[in-house]
Length: 124
Length: 163
Image 1 (cartoon, rainbow over the protein chains, first blue to last red):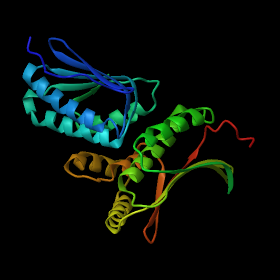
Image 2 (cartoon, each protein chain N blue to C red; image 1 turned 180 degrees about the horizontal axis):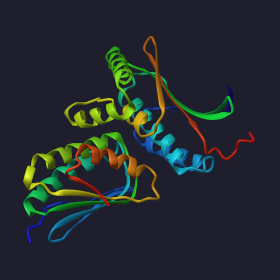
Image 3 (cartoon, rainbow over the protein chains, first blue to last red; image 1 turned 120 degrees about the vertical axis):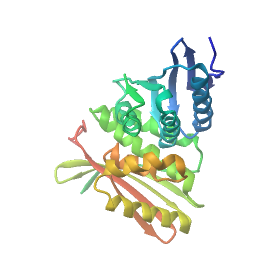
């Protein structure tokens, strides 16, 4: 199996931990996406997109169960990421977000990402 | 109009203060509001306004006030930041508020800014998000180099109305 060459991120209470299966890369997000974690998320999403293309997975799954907050700059990074996925056209992979119903913000915020890229984003 | 409660924070521009303040207010308001969505709307507003102050404020004092006030039988939440800004920053802000006023609704301009946000810095996305996601009214006052941004909305799940 081709590997995505992706490094996990752990910084304070923030982490991005990935797992690769035959058809998906899954990322468990936890903590807060804020001003301090923006550079970490930025680098991770760039490497993730390259890794997803290299491995040919059909799905990238963000598990947001333990993600407590996302600021607008991080949202902007996800828009940049999704714009690159959209540009792949027929070769695109789908981006799934697993949300936590107990965290009131997630549906509103992630719904805005789905509106930006309805053909790419799936809400689980 | 009666003030029920007011918290004031004067701060230095440290990134860590943003999340720290949001988490503190999240805990405090979770005890005052029975609807977690209203707590989220408040803390999102505080977070985005504070980040803007950290990123764009000039020299001088930086000020945050979070208050609850009673008006005509309903309770309003008000979040306000005050700081100095450069003439360019003030001009950008004024343009943004004109765009807000010209847009048919908060969600339309938020989606427009979101879709183009990766192409530019200082897109105003945080303020647009406060209007669209936190459903708060936003106002901007300019006095010389001083900028006051005020977000306000009626909240309905206040537990301690007997105040």
